[in-house]
Image 1 (cartoon, rainbow, N blue to C red):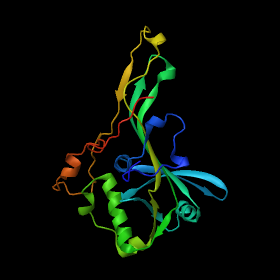
Image 2 (cartoon, one colour):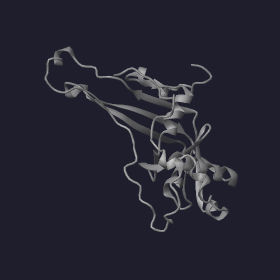
Image 3 (cartoon, rainbow, N blue to C red):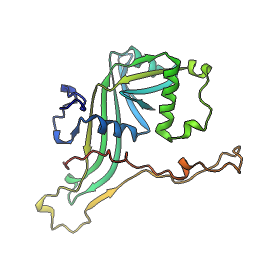
Image 4 (cartoon, rainbow, N blue to C red):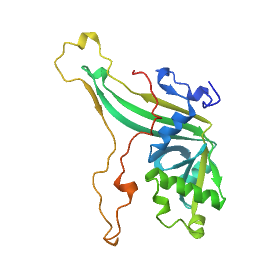
Length: 231
């Protein structure tokens, strides 16, 4: 471990395939910064819950927000800890046997206690971080949230002190016994793309498409894609 790594803990130590674990902070954050949605696991009224929600990252914190009446955020703030996960599928690895089929993926799991954000400037910054997860540059074009709107939402942050990434990449691992089987074998790479743009009927037709939409192509964070050995 180096001071650039997220400290490894018993909960973030992978028991199976430990070579897939990534603790390097920059690479963990790159996986988070490629995501749109996270899942939040918590306990409410003695029952386990897991819900998807949008998020943003500022430095060493993940931010999520919702209505002041949000049951999830109320439970998250009253819980001793929560668990958050983000995952991306990058490909389907198709072996010659079903046993050797697996996805290529990048994922992060975070453990921590949620903190209530009340400072308006920090809440405003969390909205910008959230907007940047969708389209970098969009925040500068739209009206930012008003003070009334900020007071109408609950914002929480979860420190990124205990986290681990898990990454599977690369080719197939086939059994030698299957090499003579006559079926297609390989990796199907998967990426997110924009399929269609539909203009709001109330958006004037003379307003041009901004460059951040025109040039959009969802790719892994430049130069930060972790490498790991296949299973």
